[in-house]
Image (tube, rainbow, N blue to C red; front, side, top):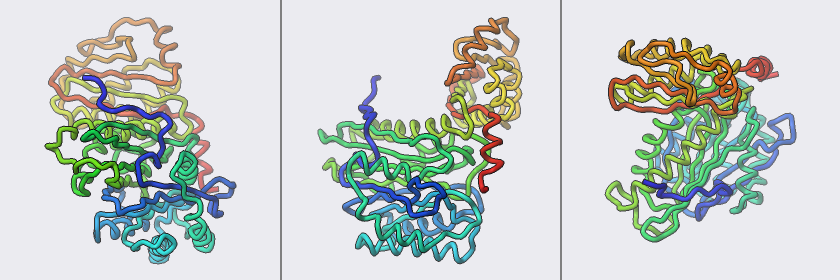
Length: 408
């Protein structure tokens, strides 16, 4: 079956009807890059979110949980970079609530309809005079065009080298529905939802409850399937907002266009997740690991995650070393059953292991393949129908350099 949605390469977070975004520099970063941004919906939007599993959850996550617990509706999301506002005690919580209240007042919306997100250095108090000054200026910076999306994307970056967006369009009840996303993430990335900051907007009519279900399902096969360094952040979450302004009949799982919408939603999540993996700190290549033939999808996910998270596998890929022993060793410690006599492994189209036995292969051809900017690892367990895909990046000298001086 062909795609049921159209990919919109130029589409940004403001592409769905009803959304504006913007960003500015308020002085949290040492450089003059934007460090404060917002997404705003002109109507109350059905909202959903997933959060990091790290027990040390930053103050902005606690405040956002409070907002969505009161009513699963958002009018705005406020994000700062350069400071995580994590492990900052009562003062940090007060600062996050102040951010929420100040943007709500500036926009004239209830404060519980504002979410807050932060990213950056852990353990430092926000310079709230600068944040408050920036919030006061934000409404004038909001735009519903590509510039608004671009300014917002710049405002959420930390060690990221590139902005990360994705967008699709599809027909629902004969109406054009748009789904768009923006994300940041480069380090402290591990598949244990959430693993970065992600923001998804759509103009589809969908209930908050169903949007929450879809976000969790999509997260399991996209954002939860990436890793850069095995560390799960204190701050990360993904927020989805649906304005309902496309004019379609409210989506349900029985809706004729539900599958197309869900496919498009997953595509946006998947592209954002892959972009984060590709932009891993110091990375030179994207690694995609596909596991097939597992006893279940869950088992396949466990093995794919273990392979993509292995420092030895990641180091081998950086060195363009076709060391399949590191791949099979990672598979064997994933904590799920496998038949040690039936495993096949390919690097791209190059078979290196069949039925758990080495296969003679062209080392020079493998070297050239592994030098590329995308490497595909295929592992077939030949046990069942379970399948999963995970994404990561190589482990380089630059990763250590970047993180050795992250705070200073």
